[in-house]
Amino acid sequence: MTASTATPARTAPSAPPATASALDTAKVALAVITPALLQGVIRRRPRMVRFARRLDTDKRAGRLLQRLRRQYGGSPLMLKVPGRSFAVVLSPADVERLLRETPDPFTPATTEKRAALRHFQPHGVLISTGEERTHRRMYNERVLDTQETEHRQADAIVAAIRDEVRRGDPAGDALDWRRFSTMFARIARRVTLGEAARDDERLTRELDRLRDAANWAYLRPRQEGLRQRFQRRVDAYVARAEPGSLAGMMAGTPSTTDVDPAGQVPHWLFAFDAAAATAFRTLALLGSDPSRAETAATDLRFLGACVQDTLRLWPTTLAILRESTRETDWDGATLPAHTSLIIMSSFFQRDEGMHYADRFAPEVWLSGAARRSPQIFPFSAGPAGCAGRNLVLLVTTTLLAELLRTHRYTAVEPLGPPLPGTVDHTRIQLRRYPIAA
Image 1 (cartoon, helix red, strand yellow):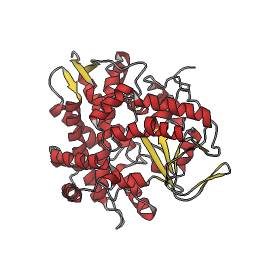
Image 2 (cartoon, one colour):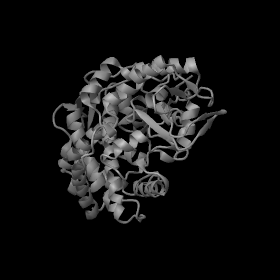
Image 3 (spheres, one colour):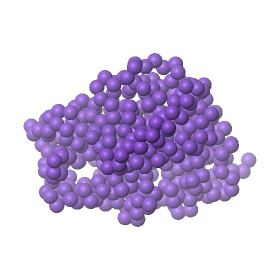
Image 4 (cartoon, one colour):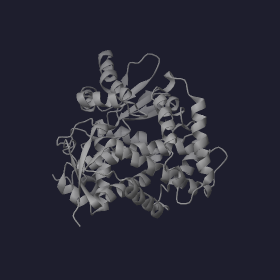
C-alpha cells in the first residue's frame, strides 16, 4: 500500500468504559500525564523538553496506551483518581465523537483549562460557555476568516512576511531557534496588531511571563497587575486599528457586548508561538530531506502539506481536553457529569498501525488520506477546531517559501527516519546555503 492511498488503522466503535487498575492508573500518570505537565502545556520549558527528548517520553507514552487499548479494549479508560472523574480516550471513534459533540455535552472549557488560561486570557473563547462562547467563537471566525479559503488580508500578510524576511533574515550560514523565533515574533506582532507593534518585544515578554504562570494553572496565583498592563498594551494597538492587520479588521467587525474583542487577541498571539515551533521543525525536516526540500521550494500546496505533517508528527497541543456537561451514554454504560476526557494527540497521530507513523509523509495530506482519518487532527476538529487554521497555514507556508526561495537548509543533526516521538526544536541547528542566481 502506498503513502498516497493508506489510511490509519481504526479501532472498534465506542464501547462501555473500562476502569484501569490502580497500578495502570499510576503508570498513566507517570508516563503520559506527568511528562506533558513537566514540559509545559501552555509554554514549553526548554530544560524539561530536552529531558523529555532524551527519554523520548511521547514514544513511551504511546507504547503504554497501545498496551492499555489491547488490554482494556477501545473504550474510554477510567482512571482511579480520588475525588475526580478522569478518562483517557483510546479509540479514534471516540475522538471523533468528542470533537464532533463539542461544546455540548463535551465542553472544551475544562476545569484545568479554565484555571490555566485565565492567567492571560480570562475572556478567551476556549474557556467560555453558553451564549458567551457562541458570540466569541463567531467573532473569532469573522476576524480570522475561518470559513474562507484565503484570508481577506492575505495580500497584506504576505507583503509583511516578505518584508520581515528581507529585514530580519539572519545573516551568515547558520540558523538557530533564537534567530528564527525572533523573526517569527516580529511577524506575529505585525500580522496581529500592525507594524507599530513590530518591535514591541516587551509585549511578548509579558505574555511569556503570564504563560509561564499559566503552566501551573490553579497552583499559582494569577498576576493580575501584570495581566492588566499587558492587556492595556494590546488595547492600545487594537484602538489604533492599523490597516492590513487583524486589529484593523477588528475595527470593522461587529460584536455583542459580551465578546470583549481585545480580550481575544492574547490567544492569537499565543497560537502564533506554536506556529513558530512548527515552522522551524518543518524547515528542519526539509533540511534533512533534500528531494522534498526541492519540491517544497516551488510548490506551495506541497509546502502546506509539509507543515501539516509536521504538526501530525509533533503536535503543539500535547493533549486535547474535554469535560462532560452532563451524564453521557457509552454503549449502555454511563459516565458521570464533569468527567474530564483526555485525548493524547501523539498517541493517535502516530498510531503504530499507520505505516507512516514515524516518518515524514506530506503525501498523505495531498491524497486526502490524513484529512479523512478521525485520529489525525493537527488543528483539532469540529465546532471547537482551530479558528485560525487557514491563517496559520498562510503565515507559515509564506515564511518558509520566502526562506527557501533564496537558500537551501541542511540540518546539522538530520531528523530520522525513524523520527523521534519527542523533538526539542530549541536545539535544532541548520546550515544554509545561497542558491546560485
